[in-house]
Length: 261
Image (cartoon, rainbow, N blue to C red; front, side, top):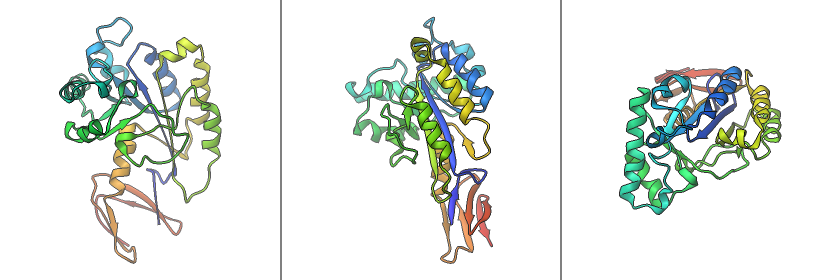
């Protein structure tokens, strides 16, 4: 018996982009065109800057995607007192929830800065996962959601990674492709064509689940809530969402609660 992603897929794709500059608008246009979904990590205390998307546009522009914390003022938090870390993350979370009308539960470490103490703190601040700035080069689930290493930055062999990801076809494995970066880098490096090509290659496919960071995190956590009888004829889904699995080639969707076959 294998757990799958929603829709009985064994591939998932998510992206994560930081800072909330106006270049996000063009990135969102590209992502929305091809059905790519992801998470945008914002600094609520910097939105008055001319180069950043204003507070009055946040809910509209990021609709269909996830908004997550990136610190009120983008501080290098591993150098800060823990009281400042708490304020940076919790106040950012509160402000972003007010702007979006949604629960904000994700974080991207500003400047890739974190420590063991910060990781330990995050659950008490209502944060369910945190993304690093360290490329793993892998397509696997994180061992630690508070030290979630993405597959690659978009300037790190993105198209090569995409071709490799699309070529995977072994049903016994579950693949996760996670891309990160900053949208202003496309302006700086004059390589918008790279993300356009990537989204065109990977978007609109039946075999890929397109999800936000939080959706990936919450689904994988929900999978862990499922337990079965020894003969696997009785399954219990202790989460609040459907769980998809394959058993001897049979597709089974377990709704929340008890399931018998």
